[in-house]
Image (cartoon, rainbow, N blue to C red; front, side, top):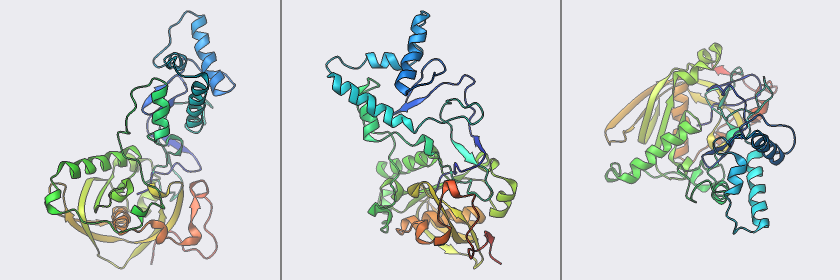
Length: 344
């Protein structure tokens, strides 16, 4: 399901930044931390100036200082190749620096959560901290001496347009459930969901056409949402659920209208009508039969994730005139759009 949205309006960091403001440039799991507050100028000038200040004072670089990393580039690289690698590194980082509104300084990456009214704060949209598991980022980190070239630890989230998101997934065969492959897929799904972070994920969203979903909503996530939103959405925490071959049954004809987002359609939201109560039967990760009866927000998450298994995205069910970017989520609905909340 979508991320806890980093939307227009006041935001709260889930984890507090360190007291000393520094620039953090994440590359494939590494933090390049200039040891002092950055002066004005280009990123390259800032980093070099920061390092030179320490050298002038006879101080040693702290951690993975940027200039020491530059020295670790193999001398066998041609100057043009070195320059190209650096440009690639800078481009990767230009949009990945979170800026503190209060201090107007660079701070370490921290997921941000919106407290906008009905702004879908159950989904994080850490657009400023997108995953750097792309091959380009991995290559840049490797060239700069940040470790051996290797594949990303976690799979990337597949985006809308990939056929795997628009075709029905197949069931997991009983004999497959206990296999190392299936268990690894489940573990990866849970990790990707939490890292995103989000409250639900379906296997097709990491490119696996299998009928597996995971979902979880914690008290910590919920605590950042406004009380009126929590009440309106009937949102309550629940522990991690892993369901294989889920079969969803609607328990009532009552529905509710709220904004939804999706990790596979990042940066957008739209109003979707969902049933208020559902029942989902399936198998646990151990192959045991399980049944989940859910209402409110948990029921919405289950419906969203089960839709993924049928090749359906929320945009296939949305009310088209409510579709918008996350930056425009606080704007009023157009005339003629239904009111958010439970339908009478």
